[in-house]
Length: 127
Image (tube, rainbow, N blue to C red):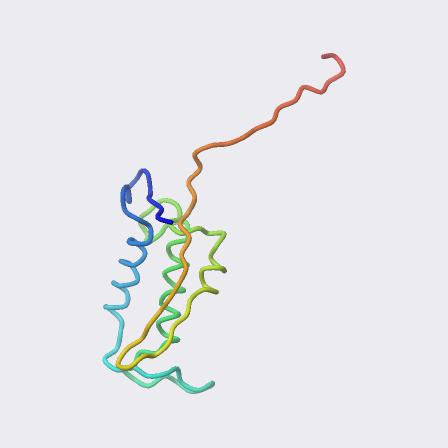
C-alpha cells in the first residue's frame, strides 16, 4: 500500500521514498570500503569494514528518528508510525552477500488524524 503525506513539507512524497532517501544518504556517508560478517560475540569489528549488524543499527536509527517528535530536526511530528517502532525493528533483516550487504524492512507511515467519531448522551433525571 502506498501512503502519501497530504500536506506540509512532504506533500506528495511517498513515505517509503522519503525513508529510503534518508537510509541511502546515511549509508553512503558512513559505509566502509570493506565488508564482512558480524564479528564474534565480544570481538570488535574490523577497521574500515561494514557488517550486517552495522547496517541493521543504521536502519534502527532511521526508524527511531523518523518516528520521533522532530524527524531530522526539522519536521513537526512523526513520519513513521510511533506505535509501530517495535514491529518495524523486528522486521529488519540484514545479511552479507558477495561484495556487499542486503537489507529488508517493513515500514509503517504515520496515520494522519482526519476524522473522529463521538457518542454523546444526555442521562440526567431532569431530562
